[in-house]
Amino acid sequence: MKIAMVPRRFVQSDWGGTETVVLQTARCLKSLGHETVIVCPNALATSNSETIGGVDVIRTGYFYPYLGLRRGARHILDRKGGNMFSFSLLRKLLGIPNIDLIHLHTLKRIGGIGRFAARRRGIPYVVSLHGGVHDVPQSEAESFTEPTRGAWEWGKLLGWAVGSRRVLDDAAAIVCVGQEEQRRTQAVYPNKRVIFLPNGVDLDRFSQGEGARFRAKYGIPDSAPMLLTMGRIDPQKNQRMLLEVMAQLAPKHPELRLVLVGHVTNEEYRKSLVREIAERSLADQVILIPGVSADGTDLVDAYHAANLFVLPSVHEPFGIVILEAWAAGLPVVASRVGGIPSFVEDGVDGLLVESNDAAGFAEAVTSCLSNPERAASMAAAGNAKAHARYSWDAVTGQLLDLYREVLGEHPLR
Image (tube, rainbow, N blue to C red; front, side, top):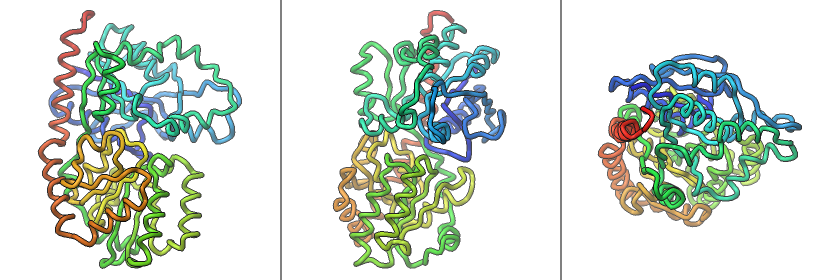
């Protein structure tokens, strides 16, 4: 079969969990003999076509249908949640020959374009909810529209034309990466196929890294315990709370280091982190790295340099970085939010803490550092779980079964 995958954007310079899922799924499908192509707007991209990881990527022009956008708003929208439109994307999805199925990895107007193209071609489409829909905090939802505050949105007519509000209604199936999201979505669509399909991890890649190389590059002593978090520099990822944790731990653990790695999607938030690091006198203990290359060595080396992985998010539909940490052999402390409790078993393969409980995170971190045997046991349990359940081959096999069911049931085929 031939599948067109449609994310909102797809560039290596601003890589995230959704990009990882799209690429790894496409690669596995290709290895199984199925043709895949990634088609998306060219937000943040420098070229309109390239091959990444052996998969063809086609990008098209786009625009934001608002009048009076503030200066710099487009760049913010490109990085996080912008509700764009693209006539050329619609033409491309209508023109690529022999597509059997469209897999949408986004909603809003781009999702509506995928819906419109699928219905015009008489083929089914599937939607993955990477960012969540029915299990999203109000503050997170508001952050997507904040850059358009004060602007007039004339693009609602475009959304109506392609059925952007009916993307989930008309989907042949909805894929949720968290069990709570699946439960809530199924309640809204009781007669629709709504499945829970977790993300996967490249076990071979993340099992091998050179921690000493990363420590040497960033000036981290070999003897210093290192905490690592990976995630967009954005309030959703809650790195600021970790600064409070470090302020609590620093007096007793002056050798402790915290490394924050992630592409910047909120520049003001990044600046606030830098200010707070200085105000709390943590400059010698906290390193902020604004993004690493998705295909470079730093990404994997960072995991192997760390003693403990910490994920303090206030909202996390899944948390693919936990799988990466497990594959690298790290113990994990994470927020009890979103999809995380659906695969992390508290006290067995990780420690779960309420998302804004700095004292609870400090206690969990101290527990792991002071009891290395328990930390090693949780790391081993997580590593075993990653190998048993979360290889991309296993995850893609389940997705391929869904594709076959959908294609077999579609009345127009």
